[in-house]
Length: 231
Image (cartoon, rainbow, N blue to C red; front, side):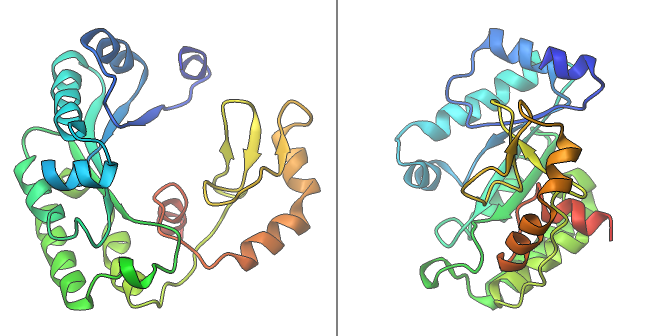
């Protein structure tokens, strides 16, 4: 993280918060511009989704540790929206106002959602309205742009307009230097240990185009969000 910061990169981090300590919170706050703790509902629901009892309490403890010990970083939450927790997103965001610096969400991927994951469209419409009200009250209450929030309706109506600019606006490089189109794909397309980024992308242009054409799309914030913002 220190090496990346010295290179001028703006660093963000998402964590489940379960192993966070006061000392780690201080260190993370020095390196990262923003830190998001994954929180998928209130205690019973979050623990059910995560499959481990006690993870909600650890996540909330992590939020307070980060807020108390990270003087530079913005501290918020990431909420993965699914059928199980759909009724809790708005109440959770509302309850955490004034405690966290921002709230973000994304529907569970991949797209299209399975029948078991579908949320009724009338509930989605109400959710969109409530999210926009929260955002109007204070933009960081829901840090995502209006376009992204409204796209929820397309997603659950199975009418999502695919927006993908992988290897143009963004790509993924893992800890071992492997280059991925995004987090959805199963295999990397090259390694930075073997060739520079631009060379890999140019050499794999036909393969990248084919893979993107086969992809049904998604609403991951690391891919669709930049595409929406740069339309």
